[in-house]
Image (cartoon, rainbow, N blue to C red; front, side, top):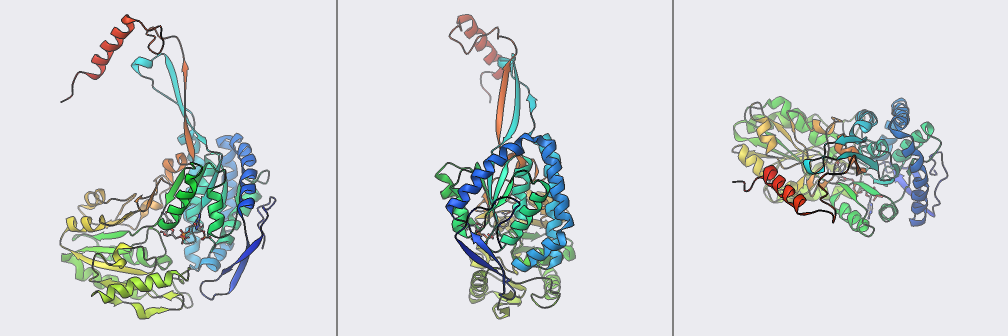
Length: 500
Ligand code: NDP
């Protein structure tokens, strides 16, 4: 298979295979784009960027809407490609596409309002100036994406970067290059004039080459470890980066929570996509008063979910190397006194991991502190919500989180150190297009989605126009004692002498 976005493909010297994670069968072969090919793609993108920028917000929105239509009408085919390459069930793949389309629509419709030129007030000392601010595209944005949500996650950067007026060169994960190509080909059908969205394929080295190319910014989504490599490579050219990295999110259950709803959210949040979700629930902290009742409901609900087999609700573990991490976390926890009340180390079979619920896990065990990225949950009894908050905030990550509570949900959510927290629903904040998504600490920085996600791929441009000469020439060697005295008086009036 070759790179075809409706535009000349960059040269490539070797290829790599993509395997169906459930069967190991080869499902595609793609070029490995080297440094030379990546630089060529970025150079082409710079030419396309000027055309795309000059279309203006309305012109770009028309193309983005047409692209949205292409994706929507091809969603069954795209869902097949997702399923084939990374293994999630077709219905989950369709849900992922639906969520991505919501954000694409929001970005196209709101770009002008958020980024367009607007007047801002000047100040007393600068009252003779008219002032405006606008947010200009960076030119070419490089997007590096993961495989776990190969449409929703990269489009969180790509849609917003495009709506802001940038061309994009996208390096999809080596596990899901076909998904990336499908998206770019759909875009090329709706905007064939210029290669505004190109895809380069390959392994980590291809991503590294993109970081070191002439891009205006890298939008990275992936693991924290790779994020550090990306930052180091981008440092060479002072290329700014958006870091959407890993997580170790928790779900908190207060004593007055709707326990059935909390258990349902924990099962979906922990097990869907076989736990391979950056915002997955990996830890649950439950008020002691309702711990036993909640655990019973949780185990009953999770026991109905099976990985693998016809019509199963969760698929295989996509990356073969992740299996040993999942196994290590479970075995280490059990060796340190934890109990598997569902699943456990023996339920790992080939690429499939059955839902596993661990209790009595020490707080310093890897299953609590490191990203597991499998269908596992640790469940811990807490005496009150102070203890829950303290334990949730203890980790290095700070991506998202969920709180189930009737009376104090907002209070608890406000105390969680994370980029987003959802009350009484699993990470709803990630699905609302107007809200920013991103993390703190080891989960990264910068934001996709919402107004922040649009501004992320721009630079702020401030412009002033002197409307008439100031009677007080402060920034001139013509400033005299009288001007100094008036300025001094104004400072005293405006800012006072001392604030207690
Ligand atoms: P990786 O960090 O392994 O890879 C992410 C991307 O980086 C891939 O395209 C990868 O290419 C590329 N890459 C690898 N090495 C380099 C390098 N040296 N320079 C530049 N790019 C490189 O993550 P995964 O794909 O395994 O994704 C899972 C991770 O992503 C999890 O930690 C998850 O939490 C996180 N994630 C975060 C999200 C968020 O919103 N915060 C959303 C979704 C996932 P290749 O595949 O070819 O190695």
